[in-house]
Length: 432
Image 1 (spheres, rainbow, N blue to C red):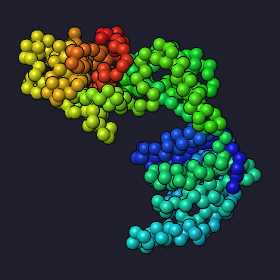
Image 2 (cartoon, rainbow, N blue to C red):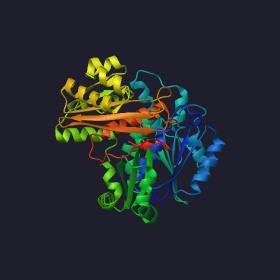
Image 3 (cartoon, rainbow, N blue to C red):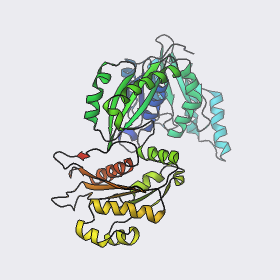
Image 4 (cartoon, helix red, strand yellow):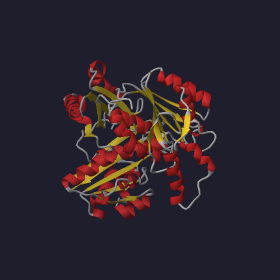
């Protein structure tokens, strides 16, 4: 087996179904993440259909840059599964029937009470000299095809995600450990209340001048994520470099708007804070229609901090379930700071929670007024100390889904230690 370090990798996913959009290509994302963790940079990702000539051309292009190409798909028993044959042809290798692999495939079928079809013999045909990674979770073996003369390596994996990911962890990762000369560690800095362009202004020097670690911002609905990545000879050193970089980011104006490091989402950050403070939460939702509750309950074990919620879409429900006063609705309408405050107080009281959150607004495409156009949402938080309300102004050109998702995110942010700021997400829109 080759022992040389893999310095550059490419990913080549095979399957016409990927090009047609019938299947989402999760394999490429998984492989990129795992290779980055091992300090192996990925130069490019490519998808090619089940066509041997196009695959061979894509393989040649990939090896023009990379030491190793990681392929998924095309290892099945049918006539259009030609990845092994194409790789063997590229390297000028013969195919041979591997008896051990064939026996494993026969046992796989026998264990499930089936007889192996003859075309599965094709899966036991292996390029000469390949390093076989036994597949205990399916019939298609993975393998590394190494060219000793050029030092190039093709790593072939099944296209079925559950097989591919398991084979990677159990078989491919140990193989790659011998050929990785560094470790890359990435940390995610989660920012809410400051736009991507403003974040970039404050971090421009870090982004343009730092080579290791690197700093890069990514925009997400309603928030910004900054990824800090460091490359070092060991994980501990890379983690230390990331920690030092994050300290410097916190020392900028951006630091006030950081709500967590590697927390994944605002809902997870909120639950972590509630648990740490031993407090409970209830939510009252109008325009978000239960989205806050949905996002919170997507996280297992949230019931230790999240008590429940009410979706009060009409005025009668607001009055009956939350105790919103008819006078408030008549004087200020359902989309108002006053109504949002009473909703948050009402759900907190009704469910006996420490904190109540509420949303009410115009998510579109219809509704709204000249004073309160589509994209206007009021969010509120209620505690024993009283209520606090913010007005969000999002562009009416935004989709209903975007307005609802962003409003839910901003509402949950009220429970986090980040500053109240102007939340105007439209050109010329009103500020909170």
